[in-house]
Structure formats: structure tokens, C-alpha cells
Image (cartoon, rainbow, N blue to C red; front, side):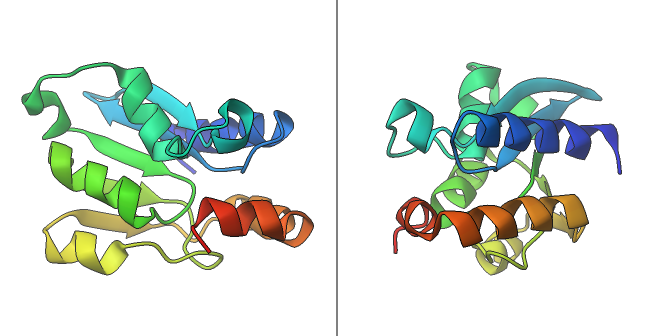
Length: 145
């Protein structure tokens, strides 16, 4: 597994240790991480801080050219909100840890020309499957069910 997905998994594990949903993300530009994030809806009582949104927030304001050359790594298939942020900022490539426990807006992203790579990572699947089994109410709230 590459170092960037490993960093996203580390963020997911931090989130789980803090009592949150174990989804992590990193934004990479020029071969280095410029933003790290994890789902913080529980920890910060936030309506929008999914892992991808937190990574974008922590990257700070960037010129459009940076987003257009960046890759977003995320441990779980992105929901419509996070996919919208990918499209809004023109991020051309997304590396997804897994999409078995949740299938986000991948078809829409592909239709819009975003290159997706799904790793089907066992560590990512295990993190989410265990969390969903233990906290179905929190998970359902997180995905708007």
C-alpha cells in the first residue's frame, strides 16, 4: 500500500480513537501531503466534517492550479457532498480505499471526468465494517439515513 493511503488510514484510526467515524483522507500535490483530515462529525458536532472535507479544510486556501494537479486519497467511497467538493475544486484524481461497505457518488465523479482508483483495501474495509456493526445509529446519521 502506498504511503498516501497509509496516511489516510492513520487519520481514520485517529478518528476512531477519538470516538468518531473511521474515515480518513489526505490531499496530495507534487508528491507531498498538503492536507490531512478525518471524519469529525462526532468529535466536533459538525454537520459537514467528513474526512475529505476536513482534509480540504486543513490544506488551507490553495490556488485553483494546485487542486487541478492534486490527488485526493480517502479510505471510503466519497458521499455526494465530498464528491461535490472534488468537482468544485477540479481535483482530477481520487484514490479510494474501499467501496464495499458504502458506495458513494463514484458514477457521478466518473461521468464528470474524475479518474478513480479503488484499492479494495482490507484494512479500510475492516475499520468500517467493525464501526458500522458497533455503531449503526452513528453511521446512519453520517450518511443521512
